[in-house]
Length: 248
Ligand code: NAD
Image 1 (cartoon, rainbow, N blue to C red):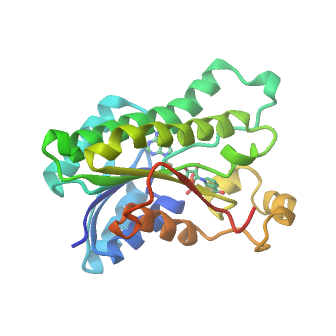
Image 2 (image 1 turned 45 degrees about the vertical axis):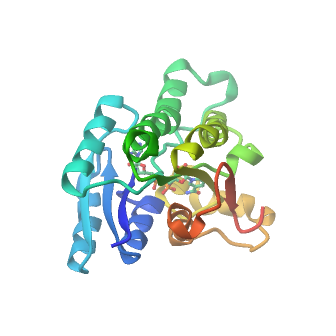
């Protein structure tokens, strides 16, 4: 076994792909899901049938109490946490800048940013060498939108991912001396249900001329990079966010 990894928002898309890849690499995997526990269970069952170890745990990671019980379940059922991938996020509905209201902002930021704070803190309490832990690695899934601004109509999403990138740089200074490596990954256009929510193939066509490789990513291509960054193979990648965008 390579250790224990927790992946948030792993019922589908990049998170589910990362869970399968991490299991293949020998990790015991906790797949977190907010509402779609049945889908996360299907992936976990598939891993177990293939000889791996996996559990699916329901928790809304934008809520600190649910994050605390998610991590307690990992402690109890899988043991000491080695790696965390903060993957869960929402893109939200299309909204003109003049029509973004407080409710929408709160929903996007609690899901995409508060969750990263809560999960990173819970992981730190377990991994920090200052608290008797053995260190670990944290990967935050950001977005090319943080660097390029994203699509008009989704400003709150782009801004939330900018916050995630800044968080990585700050947390790295704090966590490096505690034996915890933290970095980020900015996916480009990736064929998942999230991309479908903002227009799918039409959105890909609209943006494809800016992608040097001339195509969108499959979720597995992003997930491979995320699992690599969470692993000891990435032992000197810290405090930075890496683009996986096909060249944008
Ligand atoms: P997706 O919508 O398919 O998956 C996101 C997952 O997060 C879902 O399983 C969802 O249920 C879960 N989730 C949402 N809110 C949650 C909460 N409060 N608690 C727990 N789980 C929650 O999206 P995806 O494309 O697989 O996205 C994965 C990550 O990649 C996200 O951080 C996203 O912002 C990022 N990303 C995606 C793209 C893309 O083109 N697909 C591009 C850039 C960045």
